[in-house]
Amino acid sequence: MKALFEKVITDEGSSFLTRYVALPQFDAPLHYHPEYELTLIVKGNGQRFVGDHVSAFEDGDLVLLGSNLPHFWRSEHVSKNEYDLDEAVVIQFSPAFVDNILDSLPECKSIVSMLNMADSGIKFPVSMAPLVQKVFETKGVIRLLALIDALEQLSKCADYQLLASEGFNIKPDETENERMRKILEFTLENFKEDISLETVAEIANLTVPSFCRYFKSRTRKTYIYFLNEIRLSNARKMLMNNELDISQISVECGFQNLSHFHRIFKSQTGVTPLVYRRQYEA
Image (cartoon, rainbow, N blue to C red):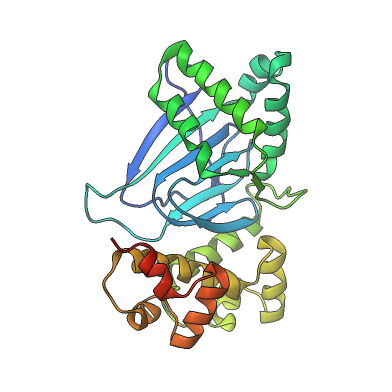
């Protein structure tokens, strides 16, 4: 599936869109829109795709997206409980809002500079999340001022991460997005199984060496590292919320060898699975 164009319609009487999302699973297709977007994951975990960047997201994930930057969030699990939904706050504002309001105000110079960097997508620390919550909780002119204040404070934040590669310029409807989409979909649906490079290379319609080069050039990580990230994200959640023993969790998350699970887990988290579990015990 190619990246889909999303038409964003603002609420009547408002210059930008603010909405709260609660779903059993974040599973929107790869999409893009001219509007800038601030997305705060209030509750949920899974994988986030922004341009050519792929990484895990958890509660408090806060990302600013530039205009027409392909993206989607995919939850790891589908909730079967209406009281345990994935939640997000999304704020979208148009380039005209930037050009006609922010860019015309000298006081907003740092905001405009930040928005220019947002072509790559920008991840902010969880400590900045209350700024977005405040925008959602207000109305009218106060909401507008809260948005400008939030953008101003984000523009002053030194602890940020650019996501997509510098110079990323793949058009939203090009075939490469379709190829990457297939890879991500297959991986997210089958990470508990033993996935070979030959299998996923076939999904991408590439030879194994070509696939390995392609995936690393697009994501800045090897496919095996990415696959283990998904498995470990699931393992961390199970260690916090599940009474299965560690060897069972290892198998449930796609690691057929317990010692390999321990080694990979410690290399990416800094602690063993047992120590990680104990950190969350009551």
